[in-house]
Image (cartoon, rainbow, N blue to C red; front, side, top):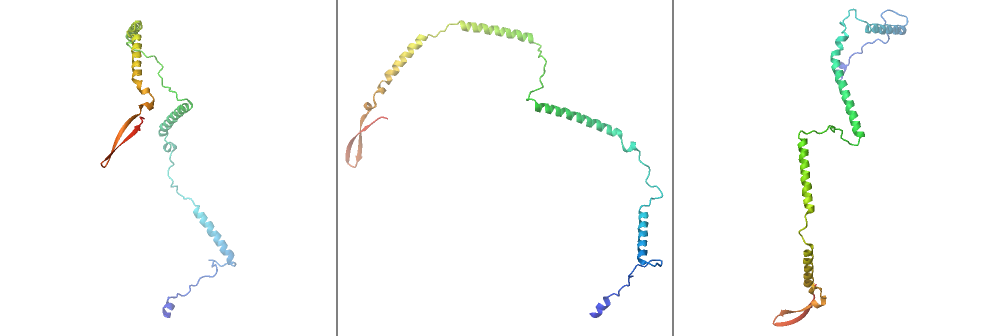
Length: 197
């Protein structure tokens, strides 16, 4: 086991403990800073370098990118939509501020082709109605009021004659009634007085 561990351990690699410049220098610290600054300036120049050959291509003309013929119908359509929206909003505001009146009345006279004939028929019907009204008002009544009054008096007399007995006092209307009770062989007679309600 110890041999396996001893075989798996690698020998330590030798690493430089200080900066090793390419050329000999008296101060290693300053040489390291100068080399590092030169390297950063070099990387900045590499990153900001421009190509020698122009590979961007031809610049697209403005009349190709901006197609005015396509934009014109769209602008006209948007203008129509805006105009319709303004009209609709004005109508809605008018409806909201009004008291619910109807504004769709047709202010023109009604004309009929047979107006003269209809007017003549209406005049004839009104004349006939006036004649009927005159006949009705001049007609005497065929009913005789005196006969009705005599018949009513006879009816009242009959009602009084019929209701005369019912107007008697209630104690005179009491009647005696005999009720028989059967209890075995003995029969007893009891007299009860009943009153009418």
